[in-house]
Image (cartoon, rainbow, N blue to C red; front, side, top):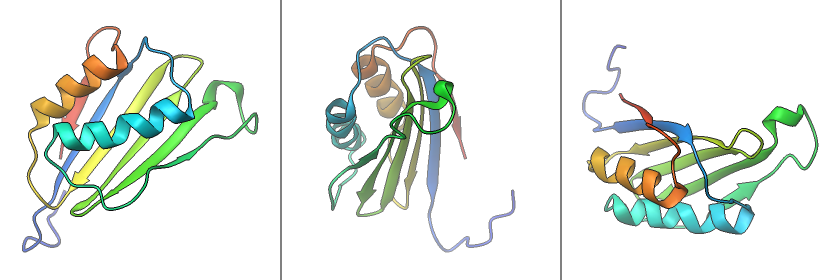
Length: 119
C-alpha cells in the first residue's frame, strides 16, 4: 500500500480470534477502555456499542463498538454465535502491539491462537 501521507504517523493493528468469556453490551463497553489503557492510549469519549438485535443474518448477531482516542480510535466487532472477535486499533501515536495481543487474549479468554496483522 502506498503511503499517501508520510508526514502523519499511523499505526494500525488488526486482532482476530475466538473468545470463551460471556460478552454482553456492558462487557464490551468495559473491555475497550481497558484495551486502550493496556496499550498506553488515551480515550477522550465514551464507548459506543451497537447491536443489530435480530436484524440481518443470525450468524452476524453480536456487537459493534467504537472508542475514540486522542490519537484516533478502536473499532471492535463481536459475533456472539461463533464467539469470534475482530478488533482494529488505529493510532497516530505508537503503541505496543504485544500488549494489545496479550490483553485481548487474557480479557476475552481467547480460545486458541490470535491472528494479527500490523499495517
